[in-house]
Amino acid sequence: MPDMLADMTSYHCPVDGTRSAITALTWCCPVCRGPWDLDFTPARGVAANALAGRADSLWRYKEFLPLDTSAISLGEGRTPLVPLTDTVSAKLDFLMPTLSFKDRGAVMLGELARRLGPDRVVADSSGNAGTSFAAYCARAGLPCTVYVPEGTSAKKTEQIRAHGARLVTVPGGREATARAARAAADEPGVFYASHVFNPYFLHGTKTYAYELWEDLGGRLPEALAVPVGNGTLLLGVALAVAELRALGLITDRPRLIAVQAEAVSPLAAAFRAGADDLLPVGAGDLLRDGEGGADGLLPDGGTVPGGDVGAGGVPGTGGGAGAGGVRGAGGNAAGGAGGVEPATLAEGIAIPRPPRARQILAAVRESGGTFLTVPEDGIREAQRDLAARGLFVETTGVACWAAVRAGGDAVRGEVVVPLCGSGLKTGMAASA
Image (cartoon, rainbow, N blue to C red; front, side):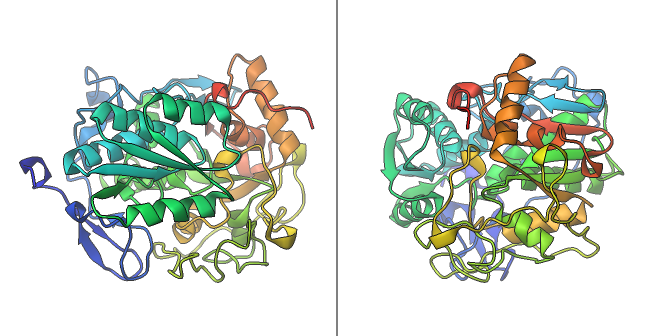
């Protein structure tokens, strides 16, 4: 392997402790088939006021990253923070090279792939991650195949093709799409650029929180609202908070407010039930074509992984609807009749069985946070409201604003919401 791989750390499984070299191209734990975590802890930090003059991209935080430079960077990161109200600000993460926050993680995985030099890269996505991987693979000169579920926004699939990636549309939902990509990932010489299973992606998304820390003068807000499907942004934020605290760069921990679409909210249902993992199928999960397993099992029989669940978590806020139609963690469970996945405008977070469910639930509880769910009308209203403020954001990207603008105790104090994807990705939502 090239010298630039010599100092790489290793993957480890948070469930059974299995380890693997980064160079092995092993995309999941071979024992439990769950996602990897990364053996990486920043050795040192740097004060927020010492960052002036560095590259105006996420690579300015090199001391905190497992890869400290990238030959394929498109200048991603350092997105604006703008006020929406006296207490709520929005971070405009749709102002990224491919118009979504996924560039934070994709550039990290793309750089890793470039260094590993596989024959080809495969990815699965509901659209934005696939678009991002297609762009960075083009930048790296790597062949890329992106698997997407049927019904993915035509504007997103056009963008994937524009970057030269091969597009494979899979009948069924996100679970069927993931299975198709994982089958290809098991072939020799393939790098699976999974934004869920590969922890390098999380170490890219964590720069969202590092930017807030710098923008706010070395602190974080009281609460961070984060849209949650597979939880890659939320888990990245949790990583950054833990690192900043361990390095003595912050003392207070922000509450994590996890936001899901009411129509597809398996994590909110589990949080409300006080569960450490997803509820069994039929007890609150939205599935299509009978996909997904029970009691935390992955469709292929592996267990859903996660870190240790922390004590002292905050329980759900009850089942009543809140102001503006937003529900607390006790809102509608993500359960549909006949195993059919209902449609939601928030396609990017419509994930019925997130593999890192245990880690997501633990992170929210340990932060003193909660889950909120938003109905479809709330998503439409939030998109129109942001557009009237000059911000054209896709339907998934407005979910947090839909939750926060409704108010309530969960969103008290200073709150930051991410606007994760451009409205050019989906257009305006049609009226119901």
